[in-house]
Image (cartoon, rainbow, N blue to C red; front, side):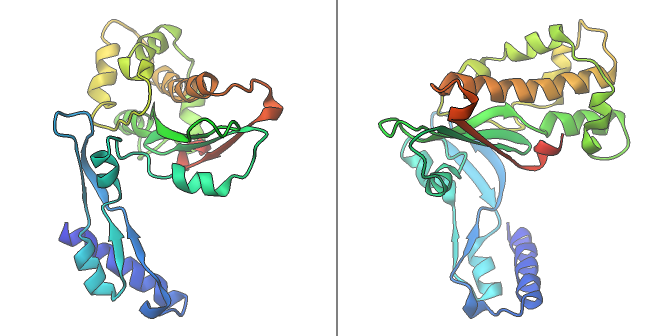
Length: 241
């Protein structure tokens, strides 16, 4: 907790120096921290992030705002994703449904309906890069599939995809959130027991899983089926896959 805050402080002070800024030029630091455990559906729901805000404030001389997820959980939410309120400020459009799709380790979407009688919502759709990176690291040199080249060399297995899509999380209605504690290599390997697939074919299928689960949620939420009436913004490292 303390060590991570020290790393944050080093990065912030280095940034300030490079931009010829001082602590007094900064209103506040938003410190999300690093999620260690996220259990929003437990009998006593909780989420845990490290990166001590008090230490960070002392080392930088700047006010720090942290623990973003906790109040959302206290109010009955799942504490994730955090960005829908920000996305809602960015969009001023009464004529089209708008989606922000962020593909990180886990993929999440924000839905801003054109119909203002509907609520803005955000939730995790399922795996983004987490399974792709883990599978790649197990079978290839490196940490990730650069430009998706290895996945592109494989063929999608419809049988494996069907099995993966049967995961109950994908049918669960929002609010919902998930993480690597649910979508990991042991989960994937359990679905591979009766299949004979090349590693590249599995990678290609995992890309399709990410794309399909995102698209399914967008289609389920949006009333405007015309491409001209739905805006979709893609962000996050996963868009490069």
